[in-house]
Image (cartoon, rainbow, N blue to C red):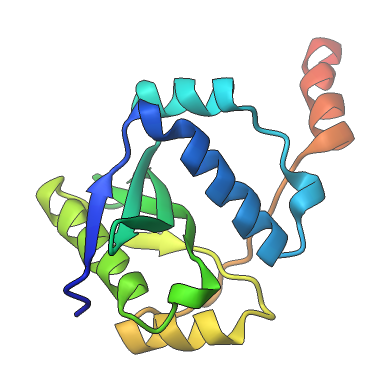
Length: 163
């Protein structure tokens, strides 16, 4: 493991830094035009602990982040952790930092009684897919992610009053 790296929990004062990482990740994923979050909104979510963020520091420089929140399985009656984003700056990949993030997330999951970690990966991101498989992760079979957003979400919400 990388002895020059520490993983720490972000505090609300780290909000601007976390937002920079969100934008870097979005740029890497070719989705920068999809980032609408403001520093104020992110600050509120971090401060209220509705989301939690880990930061990786390598030789004193912050080089990555993992943003996650807790889910709940009605079948198991137990919480899980959903990793919304995990990003290490490209020039710091291969140093074990991603593995350290996952180890820390697994440790947090165990401490808080969670039975699983979940996350998504873009189909084209073969390097990440290979990394996740090396960690012991696997794609979830027989499930398809669905989404309702934008105009469809608005129309469905308005439909209730017509029923």
